[in-house]
Length: 89
Image 1: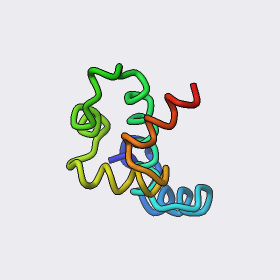
Image 2 (image 1 turned 120 degrees about the vertical axis):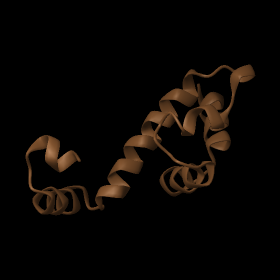
Image 3 (image 1 turned 45 degrees about the vertical axis):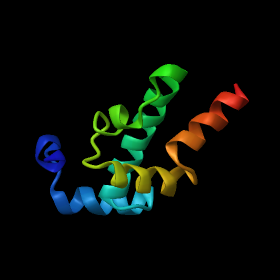
Image 4 (image 1 turned 180 degrees about the horizontal axis):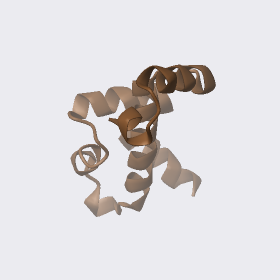
């Protein structure tokens, strides 16, 4: 869909992402989703913390997929990451 909307052939787009970003298209998309999830998590107050309300809004189809992608990119669970960010602030 991205290739079609941008007018760039799918193969060219895929090679560009792989070569320039050194990751495949799905890893690129998941990185963008995790970055958006981090932004949303930082906006939650302590009483409203609910990972389930964040992962679906960021395009993940399941909680487990979200946790796997988040942990792969950040090295911790969303809750542990959020706790660390709040301690540093």
